[in-house]
Image 1: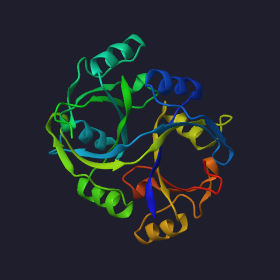
Image 2 (image 1 turned 90 degrees about the vertical axis):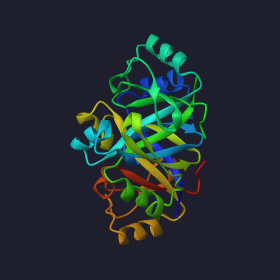
Image 3 (image 1 turned 45 degrees about the horizontal axis):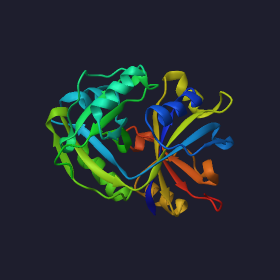
Length: 137
Length: 137
């Protein structure tokens, strides 16, 4: 029986640089690195607490997911980190050289404030930051 | 401050079909769907327990991640579900029409038995199944 999600794998060209990013810039816990000879990979582990998998599809055939699906059959689209102060985190990450897709956060699911870091700032991975709104359930 | 992972977003062309897959075939809990007008998406939520983010890079410039990085700067590579009986789950999913990249599970990180479902069976998403080995920490 499938018992849950074990991990989300992110392919990175430079492991040391990526570990630094997820540990220092994004503030995750780091649980070490293992060389997996059978898979010919070196893998760094970052345990996470409860989260969710969100399946996203276009609303009325419009929007960014519709555009994405013009080129692909579907796929892993982005990771979203929660923050308790999105304005401060955007300012901090901008100082570190991160580029954002929009200048300001906007309203996302569950009435959250959300903003996206440009994939070119994260080795091709689209990263969202999200701050819960007042009526977050 | 970034406080953790909020979600992993998976773009899907047919939300109803994808919800059925993640709920019935993969056995996740389903927490409803929300139309997000500002993002022009319809989004289905599947809460998950603790998991990890794994940054994977090529070992000695070889292997599947090296091949992946020839075409991309990096990116979200796959989701891995844990299972307590990988042989039974592979048999069950094969009966449902899922195709696998290899015939048999092989040894992965942490001494787990792992196998990959072909992305064409999951709307372009690469899915790994993993059963912990005896010395899983």
